[in-house]
Image (cartoon, rainbow, N blue to C red; front, side, top):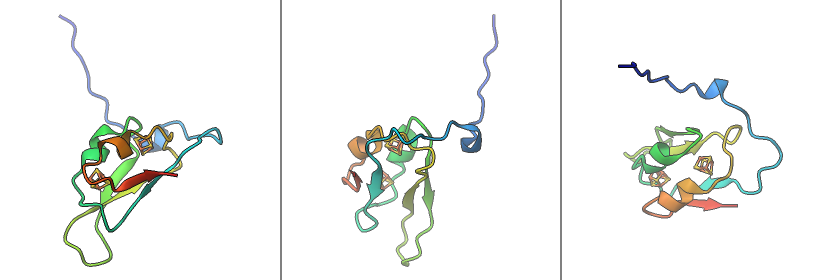
Length: 86
Ligand code: SF4
Ligand code: SF4
């Protein structure tokens, strides 16, 4: 039986996005509840949750636009519609 391997994702080794991207996601800081859904679904693994600076107890989604491909999956899966594609 062949053995499998799980390779840890390293965003810094991923392919950076070119100028061909048509849309970019924008997180509404007021709406985001830090649920982690977009983090799990992003096919480029370029979203992380960060501590807020506004004192709210929940985390906030932050998208690394250097690697985001503009697919819109994050906007589709967000349960509170906190991400808009611009
Ligand atoms: S638009 Fe696509 S690639 Fe960019 S953050 Fe959202 S899910 Fe990830
Ligand atoms: S799915 Fe929406 S509410 Fe949840 S962390 Fe992402 S942006 Fe925030």
